Length: 83
Image (tube, rainbow, N blue to C red):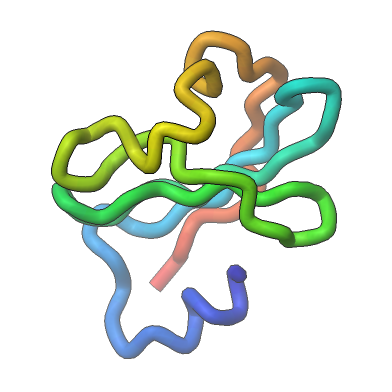
């Protein structure tokens, strides 16, 4: 996912970030939303998309992991677009 973001012609505003968390007994990776109506993305350890915890028109993502914000732990920023 990071490689795909790096291929984008311009840096996102705000810059893309990848955060690592523990969630529902597994390590997950959260890609921040980059605009008001864009959804965030949450991936498992094998880079399979799990859900979109937030963002989008409603601000609530896709509604498939509404507990993410309340139950995630051990957040660690692992990458921020430096461009």
